[in-house]
Length: 375
Image 1 (tube, rainbow, N blue to C red):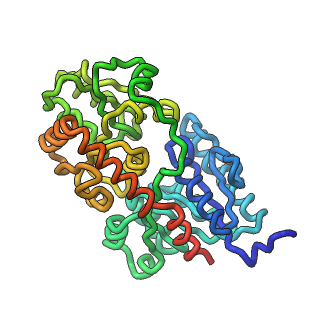
Image 2: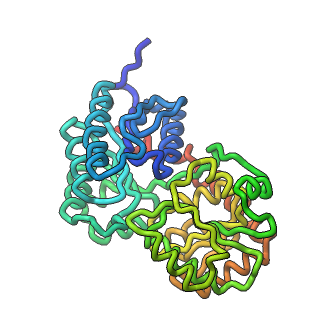
């Protein structure tokens, strides 16, 4: 019997970032949780998934400015055509910036007569290229609902938002990754496969390399540590940044032999190997609205050290991770040495963090909250 889409809730998740920056895990978890609540879902991104009604409408890694713009332009036209063909009325769009390309996407959605739920991951783009009038147009007039992931993001947004924006804004947490399949290796198997030296312990910096993430701060802190059997792994691809300045800093600090760089896109296999061999992950960020890397770390029972920014303080408490004074590499050095000298404590923290991910960051709860804002 054919389902009457006018009598049930439905939503299309449209994401041109997808697999190239780890957003695929977010999309899949969200879509599955919504399906489990009886909501009709279609995922339109740069990948497909066997358990979800999904179509690949974007290229996963277009090269060059023209190809990237064409990918956004034609990909969204195709996505919105599919949505209308399926007779869906609502599209969920992810937002990390407010530039001309973003305005185009939202205007196009409106031309296709779609209601838009905007998931505002970054209240302001970290590239510093946001255009205020575009931000106002999108938030005030083009988005029907605005989702932020924590109180900090909402408060920053409300600093310049009018009543119209405030009334359509809700907090729905970024979910955990406890249900995702990460391949587990023994620490020494992972070290062997990666061709590393098993006589060392390893600290990991993981994710896109951008100025806001404080890699320079971590390098200065690591240079101050006096424990010799430890190496720092840097794994990620630069975004709006170059690794050259960090390479120069590594040489200036005299730690070239203690740092292992993988300056590239990290695929799932290498990610799982790095997670398996690392003693803990460090998030030395200068600013952040919400960190998927933090939630992924905790979901994998990996100890974490992070700067004491408000979004981190909302997640990391006294017994599930370590916080250091933001922008203070001396304090970070102290916390790194503490973590290295107190492995049992850090392991207990990681177990507590995992319990938190299973409960307060459950996608089941998140799906219920999304269902409440769907007409």
